[in-house]
Length: 179
DNA sequence: TGCACGATGAAC
DNA sequence: TTCATCGTGCAC
Image: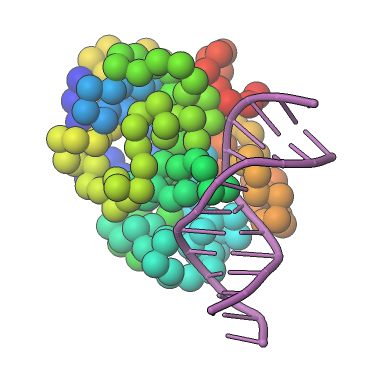
């Protein structure tokens, strides 16, 4: 497998989101195949954390591409994001589900369980995804992915932005959190 | 300094 | 539909 470079992340968020499907998320010995993601398009996207400006929590979103943005939701689960586009654009892709490949087991559907299974928590917030500890890689044999587009989950407060088709998942995968 | 509220997940 | 659980952000 081949680790993705900075240039992969430094592109339109929707493109990065789609192309993350089928890629491998690697944290140490743990490897999962990404099967579901959501795109958050920056400050004008009312569903994005960055929509309300720069804060201590969302700071990684405003940084350069290819870094992790990890935060706690509902006091019990961590959500893992990948920062995209140029520094200051404040966009990211939320990783929602992976298919276990090696080093992990159990439940991996949904952003909270994905993070738990992969051993990702706030210590990895702001971590460089070009590091050897945590990164995304292209598998040696990349099978073609049939992509399904759906509205994002849990963003009903975002008005018209809640309806946009910014959730992407691998058609037919039984590891997707919701159809 | 206090408090309402989530980019969730599982049970009822 | 409800609950567990707590850091963050913004109102006092």
